[in-house]
Image (cartoon, rainbow, N blue to C red; front, side, top):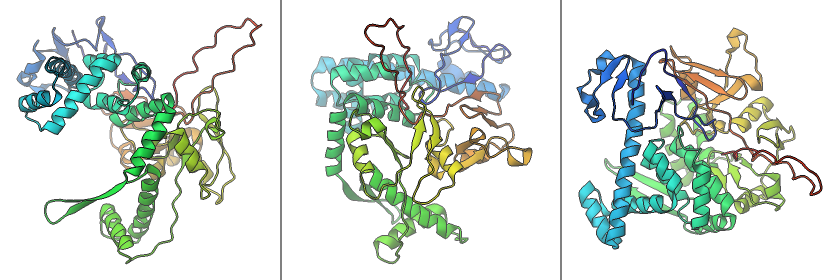
Length: 456
């Protein structure tokens, strides 16, 4: 493979899933997804044929864009090597027939504990037997083993038939995406493929809710609560709101420290607060009426099974809000104005549309993001939904750094980095596109096109 960085190379990167998928760019007629073994050129300079000897290169001679490209290629190689490792572990497990003995062998070879070895063996067995397309993506370097494990673990309890469907549907939703968004996509499809099983698994997990105390170093400890997602979201939201109120009074403690102190004071009865926190769940109307079992979406968490979404929507404390979506695309068109307390309507619309910070790899819920002007107000930018986007505070500040540029047009956020590379994440759908009804049997109509992927 020959890699040339210069006027010929493309710096357009569009992660898929919530974003548009892009095939790996071709350089001199060869796919970037192929394994490296031939000459590689960076900025007109030759890199050793054996890419594992990249430490022989004087990296100070290369510009920042070349360094980014090497980091990208290295990540692809990591996935390819991990695919080899998983295949040989699966073959060893197949030959031995004794999982415990295999775990002992693998643990010694990789210098890991038996629990981690067990997880490696389970991942290797599942991905080689039931997820061939995912394994192929790993072999191409489109994902690494950590991201692949998100799909395998999410679909571990599916039947072989449903696992194959999950594997097929996830095939185009892997390259260029972070692990959290891959997991959300897989979870949505698992809940859709097996709604009854998903609801039962959720109920079993809720029965296993617990509180754990784990002692740490330096006189500290972790207090861990395993709770239903909506309960944990509400608890954290309440603590966060109180902490931010304290911080606004010029409290010198860090926000994290204030949250910890608020939790302590509330639980020990040293503080009272009647602050209520709103949690948002999006439920397709067909799910609400019981005609379909499409998953709902809990803000900040992701897909929840249809039965759980209906239970949450039936809660008497729930405040209804109408969200009108385009049936062919699932994109938000309009948001109803009837609410218990009149909201800042435009900000609510943008947060409901974007769901989370739009920068790839950032999963901070929109509720805790800034509603940012793509065209700055002091440059005649208008406060319009087509020019507003949700960015977390970190990425909001990043856009003002030298060399960074963020441009939003209502559908696509274009991020330009100091190296000149462009990334184009798309606004996520908040509902599944509704296919048009089939034609009458006696009419001759063309086959309707696929309405596109679901919202996650």
